[in-house]
Image 1 (cartoon, rainbow, N blue to C red):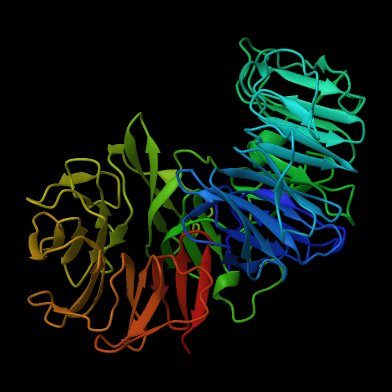
Image 2 (cartoon, rainbow, N blue to C red; image 1 turned 180 degrees about the horizontal axis):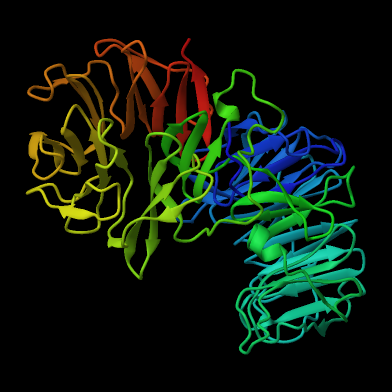
Length: 584
């Protein structure tokens, strides 16, 4: 269902001009859109325990796409290939050292890694190390029939080292015809060649010695540069710049940074060469003038909290909260995965949403996690179903993954917290003030759930705690690392590390849920018919407490949050947004 709130590495193919493949940074699944980013197919992971670094699409066969990846933490690298449009992948190469990039040049495929550059002449079936290729190859750029290779401190054309001037730590490399550019982020160091790499000169711009956070070349041959830090003085130079004449003159694009944040990749659909596609931290955008932008993807965000407010579904993610009315309709309209965009990029640091809760009318409360300088909690409130937010209470220390509201008295709010001495912050004035609550032996809290009356259930690393006085005091009723709890009348379902427990007497006694495999369970919810859903990092289970079945068809089985309505079960996942399952 969305939301589109992530960027990644882009791959286009002339064989399918409206198709776009995206590999989110560090992900293990590839997203695909066949309609210029209006909708995105559910991703299929290409492997477990690896981190993807780059991808490349075959220019002649739109269904063939390659991914470069390495074991998490480094030490071994792989190339994966799909021949069915990223619906499935097969490992076609591995090396004892990291693999950083992959590129397609004609029928040949190249992989760059710590060992050097590897070549396959049969679309990945067999591989050999290119003789004379540099060790520590980090980046591959294909332009025409030329292959450029970047290491930490050098640029090569094939296996020939190019005379790049100065001591430059190569972090960005791009080529377009005879134009080649390279840069490092610190000190604004950048170099340019206009003769295919035979000769070079230093490239300077209005940014002076500011950090160059991105340097690239558009499909039309313009150079794009971004500076990370503003220059001193009243005319700060933090900006996005474009040069139409090989870096001699630069024009500021002041609307780009506020709209999309820092670039990570760019390109164009082959059938829309006049339209630039830009990937940034919190989305993928298109623009024809670098002034007006449209967000088109990609739904790769982690969703840890869900709530319904009126006709809107609210999702709390790792980069802001988002609202959608399309998710609640039977037949979503075109572009339903976007969830709206206000035209301004959300802060991608210090903007994790730890909890969302609906209140009467159009009000919604959320917990935002930032740094001040250590982890801190902002409690915020919306009066328009999550379209805009304002802070309601003073910033308090700690981090949070959950909040709850008393259904009888919306002035009573509860915020679970950890990384601080408290386990729960309580409020009796609608969130204007927060009072820390400490429970002996709790050691913080992962989640908080409001029950009947003044009952509150607190899930902690040391067990499940139960309060009958609105969180002022609490008593442990269950041992274990309890991650979350669902309550329906006197029925209580507690889930956690290798733990699914059920109580039918309001927490007086708990029994194991038979047939549930060992796993890290994060979420639980009661369906409208009283059945139970529990989600772990590997599966979504449905049962009656005694018998359980795995819910099939969920592309991302890393379940982080669950919300059941009369019509739908909404599932927030770890790396691909929200999915829904019809319940009626």
